[in-house]
Each structure stands twice: as C-alpha cells, then as structure tokens.
Image (cartoon, rainbow, N blue to C red; front, side):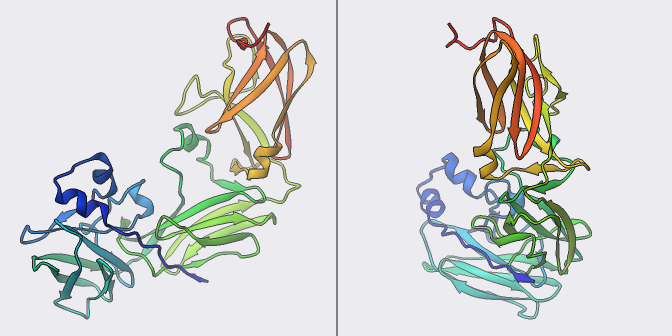
Length: 345
C-alpha cells in the first residue's frame, strides 16, 4: 500500500497579472476554475493540477470535496497576499494556512462556509460541499499533446515492455460523479511488476515503470476502482501492426503494405494477443531498425516523430523488414516517382 502526497505549485504569476488587468493566454490557461465569492470581492480556485484538468487547473469548488481528502484554496487578488480563514463547522472540514494557500481537509459529509480575509483586509466567503466517496475512476493518463490516432489504437488496454513508463491517474467519485480532493488515496499494486513514484505534476496520479517481469498489474484504491495493465518480459515480443494516419487520423485503418498509392507516412504499434497496446521503452526506440531484404528499393531511412513513421526511399520496390520491440514485420514497399525522396539522384 502506498500513501500518495502531492506536489504544490506556487501561485504568484496569476495574482500579479490580474492585478494589472492582464488577460494573456498564459494567465487564462493557468487557472480557469475561478469561482466568485459570495460578496464578489475575491475569486477562489484550486491551484493544483488534477488529471482531469487536461493541461491546466480547471476543476474548482463547484465540485464537492471528497471526505478524507484535502483541497487547496487560493484567491485571485490584486496583490500576492497572505490569507487568513475560518470555517463555520470544523466537524465537516478544517483548515490550515500554507504559504499563500489555505488547505482544506474534509472530515464528514455536509456543507461548510469558508470565510477568508486577505493581508490588506479584503473579506469574502465561499460555500463548500463535502461528499463521502463511494468509488474511484482509474485510467492511464494520455498527454494532451498526443495525436488523435493514439486513443483509437490504445482502446484495447495497455501492456508495458521492460522499462516502459506510463502515468496512472485516479479520481474519487460519488454516484459516478467526480469529486475534488487529493492526499488520501491508498494505492494497491504489485511491486514485483512495476516501479512507482508520485507524479511530479498531477495530484492523484502515479508515474510507473515496468520492471520486465511477466504478469498483470492491477491498480486499485481503498475506495474502489480498478485498472489492469499487463507487464511483459523481454522475451515476449508483441505483434506489430501498421496503420494509415493519412487516410484517417482519428480512426486509422490497418494497412498491410506500402504499395502504389499507399502513403509512406504510417504508424507502427505493437499489440498483445488480446489486443492490448504495448507501450515501448526508450531502449526499444533506440533499437528500431528497417532493412531492405529483397527487391531494387533503395531505402534512405525511416524518420520518426510523435509516433508517426515516414519512409525515405528512392523509386523502386521490395520488402522492408522492420525490427521493433523484439518483433519483426516484413512489409512490401513500392515507391513511385512522386513519393521518391528529393535526395535521390
């Protein structure tokens, strides 16, 4: 069992920028979850980045706080300011002052009023709701910068090559609704299969690395939720498949050759027998190779970026053998004149 803490972020830039009337994209993107206080003097927000925030702090106090969890309170104000606060019912929630934030810890179901006073005596309040969680949603967190095709080819679940890394995220829920709060989840997992540490950016998340032992790592918490990720040994190569992102970038079809008018830009991915997407390790990327094993095709190289593969070759045809993640895939390739690389003679 592992008790997960959080990494807090200083919230200085937003307060200073808003004080000067700045509405730059950076400020707006940093915190979109601001909520006006009851008196309209301050706006309250939760400064930490949650997995469901999708790249910026958006979840706020319109969402109930999970009982047992902690949430942080910051305010948008004219100057960087220390806060003082008090709640009207400490049996429901208690507070502590931490730097320029207030830490709220929910103890029981109910509602509580938080009154805040800034260092320059501006007062406001916000009503908070606390709810007992009855479950959790657990998933593999994908980057907001991932190309659209990744969701489609990873829909069958995940497996991990030795040394591969992923982020596992969670959110407490009540009747299927996501709740606010962190610093209370006990993760249950198999240490023989994965190495884990707290994620540096997101609360309620783990950064995991496969140790290279064959098995099934099941992630769960004390309030529920479950996620299975298969871990592979080095002698368990995946089945390699190719997909055309040129034909359809959202739902790329599988392709079996690069002949005639077929594109020279494609995706190659590995899968287990039951359809799980195999996450490669850094070493797998370094060990990737492509060689012509027959025909008159002159292969200049295979460029890769963002998961896409691009063949650079001169006009001709043949069979290219790809070696990736310990697996081999032979593909018929024909490069016409319009697809030939500009560097060809």
